[in-house]
Length: 523
Image (cartoon, rainbow, N blue to C red; front, top):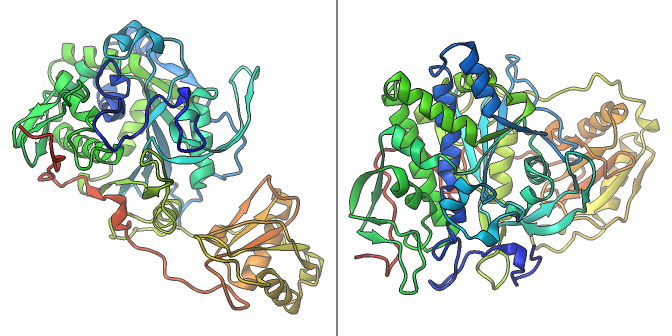
């Protein structure tokens, strides 16, 4: 995996500013095709499981189709979501689209024989967050070209451990032991506990698109995803709305050249349009056809899915679908993690300071991204672990104010340590370990120190959501972030109430969304 602007063989092609690059399209490279349709396979499968049954034997047959893998292959310090004031708990599901070409069916849909046996890439990654009260759903997509840290991961059989990567393309995580490493990577990136994952390759995707009966999509101009040297998805549509299915749906979902600026970001936005339109189609048509069609669809969907053990039966998947169906279409919010260009190579991105943090913090706090608030706001969790007397609590204070491109505030750790000692925490000391934090965070190494850490937070006015367990510290450690440059107490800030505009927000009920066409790709 490239750690700089130069692609290495494991890169498999990145985002290109011109038309000549592969970019996952053309010349046997549609292995990244069907990205969101793989996600759609999950939604469709969840809908049909409850209606496809034909007795116990058939139920067991469908169970046998499902592939299962471990939920997490890394070391995670992210606790499960805290129940809200009504005792309800959010649900976080990671949707993964694999570009694997390790079956004849997948290979037939694109790629070359050289792709067989190579580690798969997680070219589609979406976090599906269902609110605790099931009133709303937030979806956050991570562009495949985003450069992020990948934690150490161990193969499910324990025979191989992959060392941590300080910065690598997000899609590489899947090849480092399986989907459980992608889960670990997301938890490291977002500090959000992942409850389940669902991974889909694109065998059977075309037939499932056909079973839906077509999904309406719209383009602002005639579009043809085709370059003079044969690259592009081949999608050719007239201006306006067309109901796409089968291979044409696959082309829509893998089109990059021809949408917006010809980047993966445009492709992600097109995928969001497809998904929200598909959800509306499914909900408007409670049945997808006769029992025979339902059975064929269930067969294809279960054969395409890999899930964690917690979702390892059709019954569990059906139960999950009932939770998802509680969310009104108009309360589904699709977003893309805000990114900025990492280097002069336009194929590489990094999470955008500020906006990416805002989006993820809202998901962590179970705040709806549509600005409509929650029925039961998340409450701060108080530890059952009693705190020691203030004078016995040791605290290490680090100066992490040099984040977001800012210069560190001189002597900031000293000032905060002095403030703690003045409040009775006489064992507060300065820790000179180099760190940068956009947001102040208070870390503790184990449950036995949680109450002590919360006592420190209360003394300084730090929200408990910024107090968390971490294996990276040996004692209570306060990293003073760029959000706290002055003062002896943490500044009170107003929490965001809706997603930043840079997240390319799309509401699930918006039925007039239309994709802009890239100049030079009209006909």
